[in-house]
Length: 110
Length: 113
Image (cartoon, rainbow over all chains, first blue to last red; front, side, top):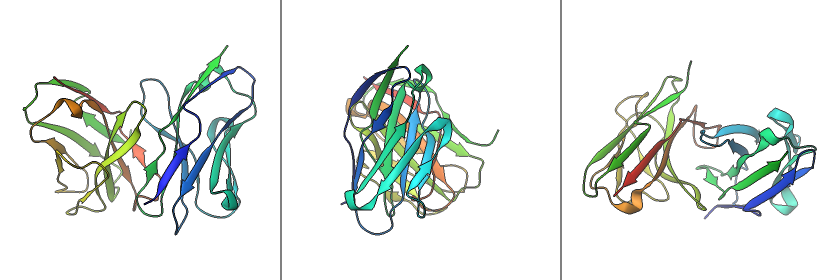
């Protein structure tokens, strides 16, 4: 069965710190990977996606992710976080049906 | 504005009661999904529909049923609610099958007492 795992449950950073959230997937076939963000009290919104091509994917709000096939990873990065990035982040993937990770809560301290 | 609407926004329900959560999309997407979101468990797929007239079971389908009579609507029914179904329910849609970008509705917060 396919699975997506996220390494961190809760990450606390100060503003301007760099961010990296881990995500590993475990499934075969076509690799389609996504990062979604959920701001407090809101629904999920797409940050970025990877289907094929350049393994470094740039998304909205300065986020990027790198697909490393040999490590089955798709980590999310941002060079300098802002207080407004406080949210929960979900990695998702699947060759047919999407499977979501359990989420990483990011708290950014001003 | 195009998107997904869900109703109700929130609901408190007595155990044993029947409840239907409504979901409508106006993007003419073929595929639709229902997820439940629980603290520490992320999103789990309940049921899905790849196209009007077809439905399938997800990871946690027990106690829930769906129908897809047309492209736009995808209601989720709890035939006899139980407290373990207390959760936030999100409806989503995608243009094609699940490996495309999914767009999410605002969610329904359901409490079963």
